[in-house]
View: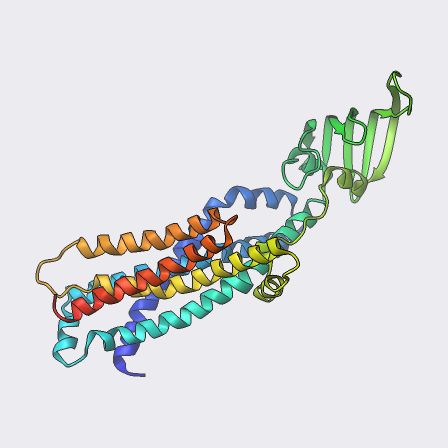
Length: 363
């Protein structure tokens, strides 16, 4: 490998990995509440570590692209400030030869980013949901306190006081609507205790409704009082927890998306698959285009430094980033959504090429 290539790769990757670590740290901070919620539900420390690791690939596709932009800008700004670009050009090295190793590295990173967006991120998203779903079954007392997550009783009234690290509960009151008969049912427990996989309740009261199958009749209520009650923890968990979730389009690997995109009998699923494929391709293309933008607009051959190039680079970057949001918003218009994902990348590369050609001519 030529010395110039090694020098460019070293300076570029040094900033690149530093930016990636920074984005990962920011992601973990923003998801600290979700991680803390899972920590209370996790049955062991290994599950918590896996859950945290599964969060990282979610931000990598966009983090890699922006890191490429920052790395290329800082590298060529430094080379311009230190007059290294002038020295290379005086030695007969053109700007195209100077950019060639970085653009080649950007292509490799684009393929790597496409793999992350198409394979690693969907798998981790699926595993993360699966891990969360499984661990909410461990302790129904905790699940009652956090009924917004994976819960089937979001519209219910729950009052509970937990003790002893969520292994005991006092004064539990659940009032839940029964959708089958449009009535309310109630359960009151003075003391509830979890021992391994068994729930032990004391002073339990149940009020439920029986349909009499007769018109213009009074409601038939069943009131049951028990001094002691013992049941499996899963019995209450299955009542609280929502049904098993299905794999959505964002959790499918690229092979499943390609298969679904060929199913012409279901046009809606086919269109959604095509949009998702375009979105993942957009992440891969942005890795190359951001590197190209950063390198081309950070080169300065004039004696007076100007912020004009950085402003133009920021505008082109925002156009690409805005296409991510706009493409997702236009999901009900498949053709427009795909064009919004792909077309800005092509336009940005063409404009950047004109800028690089202008710079190489000394303008």
